Amino acid sequence: MLVALGFLMVAVFMFLIMSKRATPVVGLIAVPIVFGLLAGAGLGIGNMVADGMKSVAPTAALLFFAIIYFGIMIDVGLFDPLVRLILRIVGGDPMRLVLGTAVLAMVVSLDGDGSTTFIIVTSALLPLYLKLKVSPVVLTVVAGLSNGAMNILPWGGPTARAAAALGISPSEVFVPMIPGLVVGLVVVLLFSVQLGRAERRRIGKLVLTAEPLMVAVGSGGDRIVSGGGTGGAESGGAEDGIVDGLDPSRSTLRPKMFWLNAVLTVGLLVMLVIDVLPLLVLFIVATSIALVMNFPRVKEQQEAITRHSSSIVSVVAMVFAAAVLVGVFQGTVMVEAMAHWLIHVLPSALGPHLAVVTGILSLPFTFFMSNDAFYFGVMPVLAEAASTYGIAPAEIARASITGQTFHMQSPLVPAILLLVTLAGVSLADHHKKVLWRAALVSLSMLAVGVVLGHIPL
Image (cartoon, rainbow, N blue to C red; front, side, top):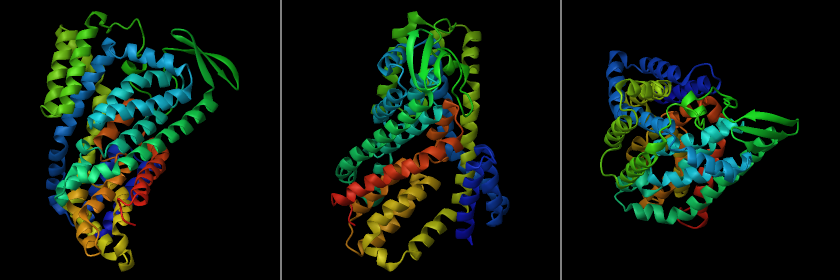
C-alpha cells in the first residue's frame, strides 16, 4: 500500500509540475498532504510537516542572507568588471557565452556549495544572457549540469556520506572516479556547445558596437538591441537588480567601495571553502557588514533588502514547501517501503550486477529523497546484498555517487530552486531541458567506472 502510494505521489507531483498545472510551491504542499492522509497519517501529518520544516530551516535562512549579500554586491557594482571582461571574451557569440557559463560554474563549484555557485554564476552572467537575448533556461541547464557533475568532490557531501555509511575512506571512493568525473565534465561541455549553437542559430551573432547598444546579426537581418533591455527572459523575468546589472548610471553603484567589497567577498568565499564557521553564520555576518559598509543610512539598508525581496520570498517559499514533501515521505515511511520493495523485487539474476544496478537506481532515488536518506538508508542495504556476490563496499559507494548530476536537478534540492528563481525560469522549463541531459552525464560517469574496472559489471 505504502509503496503504491509513494510511487503514485511521485508520478502525480511530476505530472503537475511538468505540465504546469500547478506551481512548485502548490505541488510540493498539496500532493504530499493528500497522499499522506491516504497513507493513514491522520493528525500526525502535522508533526511530519513540522519535522520537515525544522530540517530545512537552516537552509532557508542561509539562502535568505545569501540572496541579500550577493544582491548587494550586484547593486554596488562588484561584478560589473567581470561581466564586461566576459562580454569582451564572448564577443557577442551566444555559443561562447554558454560554454563560458559551463567553465565558470565548474570552477566555482570547487567550493562544494551549490547555492554559492549558482548565485555567483547567475549574478555574473544573467545580464549578458538578457543583453544577448539568450534564453535564461540555457543558463540554468548548463550551470545545473556543471555543478551536479562536480558534486561528487569529497568535500561536496555525497562522497563523504557514502564513505561514512560504509566505513571506508572518502579517497577510496573518489580517486578511482576521477576519470569518470573528467568524462562527465566533457559531456557537459559538449551539451554546452550544442545548446550554444542552437541559440546562435536562433538569434544570430551579436556584435558590441557601443555600450549599452549592440547590433544583432541574424538570419532576419540587422537589428538594434538595447544593452540594458529586459528582453530574453522567456520563462518569467528576473528582478530589476539583476536585469540592469550593467547599468552604469544606477544609483546603487559604490565605485569607491569596490576593493573593500572585493576583499569582503573573497574573504567570505575563502572561509566557505575552509569551513571555519557554518555557512549560515558566515552569510549573516557578511551581509550585516556589507549593508553597513555600502549603505550607512537605515533607509538605504531597508531599500537594499527590499530590492531583492521577490527572490527571497520565492526561494524560501519553495524550500519550506519542499519540507512538506520530505516530511511526509519520511514520516509515513513511504521512502523506506519503496526502497525495500525495489530491492526485494530485483531479479536474483541481477545479484552479480548490483554495483551497476546501484548506479542506475541512484538517479531516481536521490531525485526523490535526500542524500542522507539514500546514503544512510538505501545504499547500506544494497551494499549488504552485493557483498554476498563478492562486490566490495567501495565499489557500491562509487556507483552510488554517479547519480549526483541527476540528483542536483531535484525540486528537493534548495540550490536548484535558488538557481531557477534568480534566473527567472520556471522549474518545469528547466526540467524539460535538463533531466535527460543530466541522466546521460550520470550514466557516462557510471560507464567509465565500469570500463576501467572500478565498478564491477
